[in-house]
Image 1 (cartoon, each protein chain N blue to C red):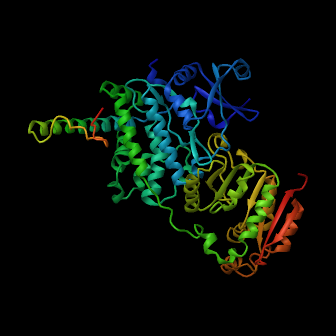
Image 2 (cartoon, each protein chain N blue to C red; image 1 turned 90 degrees about the vertical axis):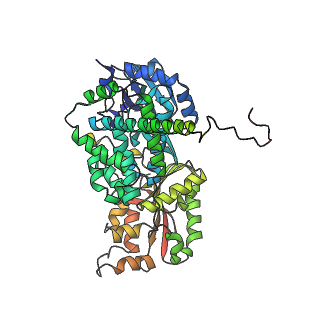
Length: 62
Length: 465
């Protein structure tokens, strides 16, 4: 027997599919964000990594 | 050992009670899940934080007293009083929802899952929520979606949205349906404006539409499809984060009601306040009480006095905004001995669920040894039309000492309540009749007229007690 069949709650097919849809939307959003950041980098609008902010004592990151 | 009637739904776990202690029997699979939980850092962390109930595995003697078929037994710390979400305020349900999501998120990090999402799995120690259903934890099945997402929506999210967006009290909905509000019901209630609010389009509208559209598809087939499509734990985590943000932003401001500022706004009460507090302090302080019910607790002033000499106090009031304010105040104070509950003494929580046994009545869950019934009798007798004798009989049926206040017919509030009624409607509302009824069921140990000359306090214990 599949372990997936052992849940005692019925998740509801619609709810399961909704989670996949939301997951897909989230993945798409993350993908678009990554693409946007790489596009900004390619156009030299954003640097590869932000410099760390100086600490209170001026010694920088440790 | 006595099986707790409300714990039968999960075949891998069943709660039993014996001598005031709480045990949980586990199936072989449940025991494997417990071992995985016990070995995790998450369990120790959540227990230390007070988010999950303290639990130990117990040895052979306890297992021997259980029916056959159980593989292991756990002992849980007992909570002071079992309450239900239809007795909680908005803030309590929201804090319980956040706890549920936090526990789930912490467990996912260690490949553990919480198999259900029910507010009945959360209880209270004062105003601190604690997750009690250790049987809910199981090993994560990679690729499986969050089975309890629908249950989270039905029992947490939609009730909170009803209150926050529509001003609809969620308590009657949850009391009326043990499994909560369905996506279709939630969709029917949301207005066009609500559909534009954060989280409604996905968790309500789309959820309901997909449920209708795929009703004919077996859940098993749907799970297999999403697994093949690459569903993974990261997607569950993303959903949990999204819901946490959504729930934390849901807000409901308790409006000013006739009861929210009752004590300060009612000038006729001021003259009596100090004497009344002293009477309660003396009566409550003469011994230690196990459980106190404060009926019509309002801002909890007398519940706080009683709490000084009690293990636990239920501060109950019918007015949701008043109880919500009390909950917020007690949270600020860090109080652990007072549990605020929304409760109508004329319509208290009934027995509900399968065979009327899954959810107990208020009295089934703990009778008081002290009851405060202050500034309440006139409202019940006149506004709610309960005969005075019935009120006294009910107080006697609780079985403990009572501190009860009787406002005379000349009291301004009684006059106001009677003004809306036809002359002669409440002839039984009269001090001599009240005292006659009281002395038939109780021994009056002490009575005191308050300075206004319009209110009398009684300390009484049931006959034979």
